[in-house]
Length: 150
Ligand SMILES: CC(C)(COP(=O)(O)OP(=O)(O)OC[C@H]1O[C@@H](n2cnc3c(N)ncnc32)[C@H](O)[C@@H]1OP(=O)(O)O)[C@@H](O)C(=O)NCCC(=O)NCCS
Image (cartoon, rainbow, N blue to C red; front, side):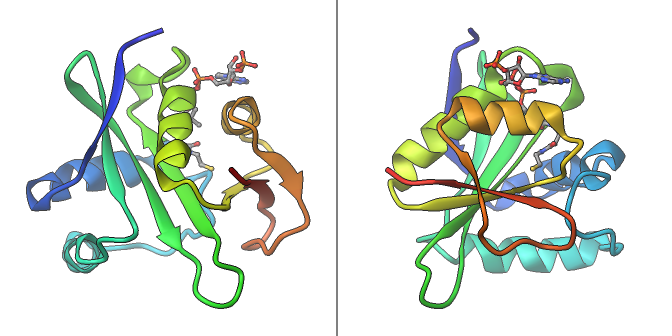
């Protein structure tokens, strides 16, 4: 397995995170298809970085930035976090996603949801390998809900 490390994102990562999250094949498996302009992304990213208790990490492999993983706090009584991950296409299929999910949830250390497109077999396998199990939790559209607890 590659040496995988997570580092907290900072403002200079804005464009990089855009590139990871808005690659067409990543958007195709996300819950929302609405277009997001670079300016809207920049505003979201700045606001999101200010939420210090809801981390965004850059995934590094062999010292190179290869993806992004974040945990959003789900508002309301559930006290769950929702994890999202996107790797650069060239970094996929080598265990990096699984390592990043494991490290993110270990650090977060609280109950966590993942919403996954049913056809996204790589994502389902990566989350299952990290201990996530199919649940009947809330979902967006046709996505499956997976849950993990420490
Ligand atoms: C989903 C994603 C994070 C998985 O990370 P990855 O590094 O590619 O996956 P890994 O190499 O860690 O593999 C994890 C598991 O998935 C399996 N897997 C990998 N690619 C696969 C594929 N194309 N089809 C089926 N299974 C696959 C692996 O065999 C492994 O399972 P195992 O532990 O039982 O052997 C990554 O592919 C990605 O960023 N995809 C695009 C964005 C995305 O789908 N994000 C998730 C939205 S919910």
